[in-house]
Amino acid sequence: MMREVSQLLFTLHITKTEVIILLLALAAGAGIAVPLIMLIQKSIYDLELRIPQTRFYKVITTLLKRGQKKNDLPAAVKRALKLKIKDDDLPDWLSGWIEHADRRIRKSGLKIPVGRYVLGMALGAIVGIFVGLVVLKNIGVAIILGLSAFLVPDVILVSFMQKKRTKMIEQLGSAVRIFSAEFKDTPQVGRALKNTAKRVPPPLGDVLSKACREIAAGYKKDTVLANMMEELEFEYGRMFVQILRIAWDDASVQPLFSRLATRIASLQSLMQKNNSSLAYGRIMAMGVNALIIPTMIFVQWMVPGAYEFMTMHPVGRLLVSMSFLSVLVGLVLDRILSGVDV
Image 1 (tube, rainbow, N blue to C red):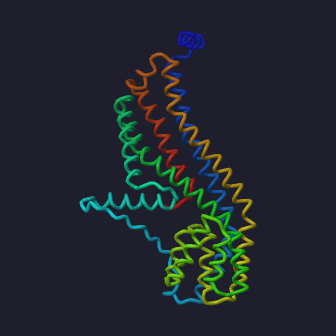
Image 2: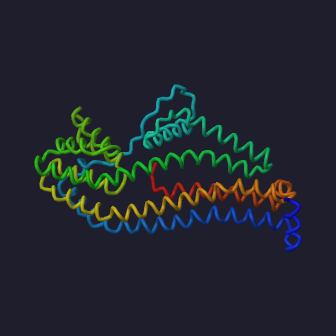
């Protein structure tokens, strides 16, 4: 088979080096181009979704400013969950990073101990550096693979967080309609929220149930709403919490819940279309990036002398570095495409 390939290349007047360069260049270029296209597409989708929100958001903000004092407004406090670290000798940057990792795991809904998560990332980085230094004999690739080992688990966590957020957005429209009907019958935020939580499935139902438990435990309303704001970290979720804050003291704002539910329903189909399109693009981008290593193995198997070219020749080493760099860039762009703040 390899002899036939060599004869074909000789007939076409194509050198082995040119074949290797072409395949690696195509792999690297595709790994960067696909995520960039998806990033542009996401920017357009975000603009389409944000424009209808602007006027309604201004109405809510105006009511908040008129009806409440400045120091009574529910601040969107982002309070990281404290992680108890027994070893006080850990550097501040490391303990802070572990706290941040624990926060991401909790928000994703996965039941993974933060210790295993950190250990898995460390082992992945060690394996990546080993492959770069020993197998490919390229310190640049070793650094890139080490960094990628830290990004891959984060991308996986973010995908779970995005899935959970998308589900809550889909549930919010019906939840707001239920709350509006309950609040119209009995203008009490706590009672209406409790009845709504019973009829809304997880994950949004869990957020509402948690708020009801905090109300029953005697938490201040600003604390309850701040915790809800932390969970519902998307545009319409924040609007819902802000209207709740107004409704706590002024039942006349009940029509705003109906207006919010109508707006969410009108954008539901557009959001589903955009999310499915972006999900397809992300899968395509990850697939292209995942083909880098199989492409290199295929080239080494089909083209004699390819391994020596990729590990010894300066041009080959540069192409291998660019190919793996495209994987790193693809991971970063995929993180941006997720639109999830952590």
